[in-house]
Structures are given as C-alpha cells and as structure tokens.
Length: 160
Image (cartoon, rainbow, N blue to C red; front, side, top):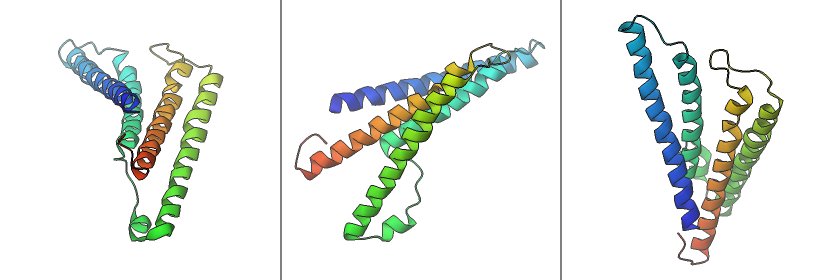
C-alpha cells in the first residue's frame, strides 16, 4: 500500500511540476514574442489555456490525495459519535459517486463523443478531455488508499 501511495504521489507531483514549468516557459515565450519580437506566437495562448485546465484538474486530484481540499465542515465539526461517523460515511459516498459518475463516466463519454479539434494547435479535443477521467481515477485511488489506511489503523496495523 505504501508503494502505491508513493507512486501516486510521485506521478501527481511530476505532472503538476511539468504543467507549472510549461506555464512558465510558454508564458514567458508569449510575452517575449509579443513585446520584444513584435510577432506574437499563435499557439501559446491556446496551449496555456489547456495546460492551465490540466494543472487545475491535477491539482484538485492531488488535494484529494493529501486530504487538503476545500471542505465545509460546519455540520461535521459539531457532530459527535455515531452520527459523525454516519455523516462522514455519507459524505465520502457522495464524493465517490460524484467523481465516478461525473469525472470518470462523464469524462470518458465526453472524450468518446468529441469530434472537434482545437482551433490553432489542431489537437483532437477527445485527447484533451481525457484529463477528466484520468484525474477521476487518481481521486478514486487516493480515496481508496485513505480508507485502507484508516481501516488498517483501526485494526491496529502498521501500514499507516
């Protein structure tokens, strides 16, 4: 379990670092070509838009992995005992349902039915839309790892 966690962490961190590097490099090139060369690059605006979306999706998956995502805890903080457990269980089921249905199923369906291409770079949109199910799978794996970790702690295991 620890090995899978380390692999997932390394993959997500690498993809985030790569996307951030791409944003900085091509953003700098866009500024340089526009202001110094007086001939703005035609593809960088579209590339930066897509990379920013990808970075946001991967970042959200990483936040779920690290359990540092935005959460409204007004009710759960006040809950006690078995009600708190049931409420947290219900919230986790809702999160998993949403991610599986919207991110994975909806993302795969969107990617499978997309026929258009990006206007400047001519990349098939179905390729760009694949980031949604990929991040959905990362979120589901991260949540399952969290559940396994909590279960092993409760059982007195040392896998935490």
